[in-house]
Length: 408
Ligand code: AMP
Ligand code: MG
Image (tube, rainbow, N blue to C red; front, side):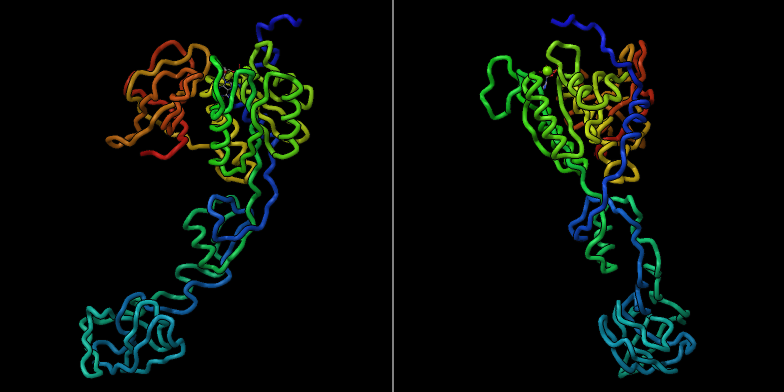
């Protein structure tokens, strides 16, 4: 039997070094053409520019009268009524006006629109209350969009407004980066399916379901590969299946120093382990490898560790693979709402709720920060970056935090 290892043979890397090592292995996935109007959440793979001006002809911005500003305050004859979608060929001569509705084409010869509120029409004659200026209440050609104007930049995320913009310019399909396929494997003899009978001492597999949800939330397609016991052959089989089906494989558990922690040696045998230990809490044994040109993250088994490690290391990589211009969560400065105790030797990513109070972002802890305690992530929208040390941070102190969710 092998002697018990007291310390991992992998060097401890900093979080920054871990990011660097991951990023050297990343290139965005190829683009694919998809229907535009259901593409929310996808990331645009090329610049999209307008080929037409908007509006393409001058249009009335209000309901009123189209007229010639040069006729001043003189009484005008009302010749016609123009509506949106109506004639684009009408003409106004000196001393005349046309009733015009919002969005209707402004007739040739007219150079201003006067609102109904400032006009009175009686028996075909129009009296206005104030002198119009050239251009009043007219949307000029290209005012909203100019020909050649950038509509969506490569790397931007499609949301409701962006889908609307594509519809506006008549783009029915567009190239977006392919969604990464991400396979998730749990390991552990004690780990059981949540809907199966649970023998005394067994643990329901929360990691895989949390990670699969996090994978989808990160814009990827999630593949669930089940639970591998702490057995080399099954773990190897599932890993190889993941590599065949996915771009990225995530495992949870089995990366520590226990005699049944088999993931690191398996990855070393099949590929290259780029790091096997990170100076950070929770999740020190987080492991990153490439096997057959695919990325593999060996995440820790404790539920808070696996999900925080996903957030810190995996999510930015998954966003980068999709060509996201901003793959990392934003960092914000928060005011501590209560005392925060640092870890003596490692930077700690403490789970917090960030709220907007009295003009500042205030952080409240989610309670005990045990790596086994998944409740420490419930309703968390931030990870407080707590430097190592012995002195607690006091209410009112400021620290940076990763903003991982919406502020409520
Ligand atoms: P390990 O890193 O494999 O030693 O696992 C550390 C701890 O995390 C153990 O107490 C496991 O029972 C727990 N654990 C491992 N995998 C899972 C999982 N998929 N879901 C929930 N807890 C787990
Ligand atoms: Mg285990």
